[in-house]
Length: 256
Length: 173
Image 1 (tube, chains in turn brown, blue):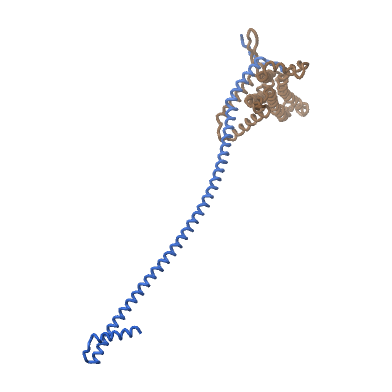
Image 2 (cartoon, chains in turn green, purple; image 1 turned 90 degrees about the horizontal axis):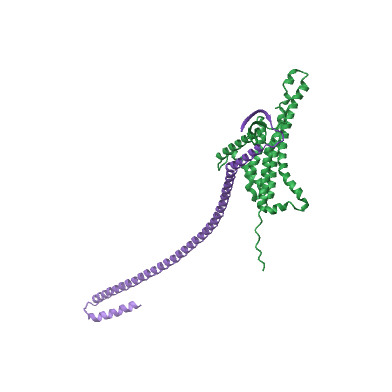
């Protein structure tokens, strides 16, 4: 590792007359993440029994929690979004955790990925808003509550995916950078503190053992979980707001 | 179009690679369908099926309990009525037996009375006959005695009339 603030490694580039495609480490991480989740799903699908074993109980509990969370946040009428939210959460989780292998790089530490996911969220919001309100009413929504607010509304609409993307990206990438910084500095610290005793201490940076692991648990594991949850929750909130509960059927008003 | 491999090239730390974005989208889409089909739908379906089964079981049990309770009440009622009926039957039988007993006793009394009456009749008859026999014998004896006393053959007819008269007098005394 040359620098702690490197972007994803570029494995190869495909040059075409018009543009160049850089195939990076991120793509590999995403691929591995997809394969892992597919295998996991296959294993669960094969072992599914009416009388569940211990593993299935855990899986069922988690799936139930997901559906409960979606119906609590978005309303019971929006439960159909639960599989997407679950996919998003699991992808985010695994893509972040794969960075802990040190062989791969967290895919969520690449802005391209988080921006892609955030744009999906925004796309869903816009699609559902237009579907539920109609195109004109949706455009008119930008001028509310007063016309002067229009630029602000447009900015906030554009800021939404950007803030989503940068929040996730920044947390994971920052965590990785921080872990790498501490790891490197602990090596230097070992030789500064104990280097005068013997030359061997500068060769064996024993302070690097243990301490980075604890930090990694916070920055990679915990932060990864929290960011996946935050991303999924915000997606739920935005899309849920675009899908209000269906209007109650009007009570027949038989006057006269 | 050509390929170029790198060993030591990095992208910018903060940057957007359109190809990576496309790759992320495609993967998310594929993963969404795979997980939906293989994980979320089947697991959710399994949970719901089991939940429904449990609900059914509970409502069935509730129903069975209610019906068994109703049956119990009905059986108790029936048992009570059966008890009453058996008591009634017993009472009726006892009454009939009593009636029959009385009848038998009465019949026996009547029969005994009749037997007694007949016996008395017979006794009276026997007595009368015995009396007649005695009368006859006494008259003959009297005649014999008288003949011996008189030692003469008197008019038998006259004597007999006289003796009969005599006996009648005795008999009526």
